Each structure stands twice: as C-alpha cells, then as structure tokens.
Image (cartoon, rainbow, N blue to C red; front, side, top):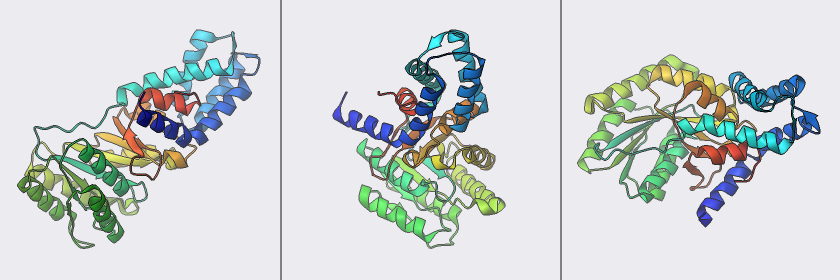
Length: 310
C-alpha cells in the first residue's frame, strides 16, 4: 500500500470517528458476554437506526446476523467484522469512480446541491483531480444567485489552472451554460463542469431554472449532461433522503458525492442512501483540504464506519 493510500485511509478513519465511536461503543455495550438472542438483535437494530443507517438497512443487517449466528456466543469484534462485510456488500454496487468519456468533447458535468452542501468547493476539488489525471477542465459559475459562489469558483479555477466562465450575480444561468459549452468546444476542453443554484426554500423557482439549464445543455448536445451529480452534506443525516428525492424530480441525478463526513456522527446515512436509491457514489469528502475528496471505496468505508482498521 502506498504512503498516499495509507494517509487517505487514516484520514477516512479519523473523519468517520464520530460515527464509528457511536457504533463501536454501542456494539461493545450490547455484546459483552452475551448470546445473539432476540433482545440483543433488537438492541443492535436500534443502534443501527440511530446511527442513520435507516430502518430497512438496519433490519436487513440484523436479519443476516440472526441467520448465521443466532443463539451463539459472539464477541463485539465478531459483530463489527460481520457488519463491515455486510455493509461492504451493500456499498460495492454503488462505489463507482467518475468516468470521463473521451468520445464527448467536452464531457459535460452538471453539479447540483443545496446551499451549504459544499457544492462549489467540491467542484474545485473535482477539477483539481481531473487536471492531475491529465484532463483539460473548464468551470462554469452557474450559481448566479450567490456572488460568493462565483468568486469562490474563480479562486478554485486559479488554484487548479482551470479557466472559469462567469457572469454577474442575478444573470441568467442557462445563458451562462450556453456560453460555457461554446467556449469549452472552441478551446477543445476535455471536461466542462457547470455549477448550479441551490436555493431549496423557493423550490419551484429553482426547479424551473435547473430544468431550463438542462434544456439548454441538451439543445447544445443531445447526449448531455453526461453526468448530473448531487452533492450531499453528511451532517444533514436523514434529510439527505429528501434532497435526493427533490433533485431527482428536477433533473436526472446520475451520481452522488457525499461531503463533510469528518464533521458528522451521521456517516451511516451513506449506507441507507445506497440501499434505497442505488445511485453511484463517485466520491466522498472528509476534510477541507484540496486532497480530501477521493473516489469512494466500499470496503475501506465499511471498515472505517464500524471502527475497524483497514
């Protein structure tokens, strides 16, 4: 294992420590010289639910443990290992790195999410990673409602060496998307990442604007957007479910990026989202640093979630 990989796994474990402490301590409290009986299973299911894994996932995990270990003496470590294996099985189908299709020039990525989710910062980090992979990247500051978002994206563009297409606050986001696609084509860019507004308090207005942006993109390229990503803040816990539903109703969300796992005791929500929506999870964020957004890996996440070393 490379030093870089070791460093990332250490940051992942540290980032998920608030979630894993709750789960690990809870498991230790339940399985201390005790058989896996109905009462223990009920306690475990309650623990999984309060750790944001969701009712259905908690029931599924508990049922699988009952099937293989019911009425047997089990240690806390055995339960942790079994849960990590089961969670890995749930997460593996959705752990898919973001793939840029060279057939599209540019490959257009539309990024959505509510204000405060870390959307604009995520775009900057994603652009940096794509540049490091040898791709030419252009950014479009399509969150025209927030002057801060426009300035923030310009700063990320300077850091990563990516040109940024922007306009003034309050300008038409769809027109900006149109201009950005024209420029990305003219400059033969590999990737164009388009930011969007995230004001959920006026959902109808946001829906109309997002749908207009998508229509303009599709008019420019009938195969686009090639990815529509939803950025979710892990600290929102179960509210993330309603955000997925809301944005899916507005645009065809193709994948998720989950941020702020380091500031949350609610990392289990990612498992519940995978179980319920089966949307690809392309990347996760566990810090503010430029390198703290990394491709999502099921087994590493599952082990870190329950407090096991990689």
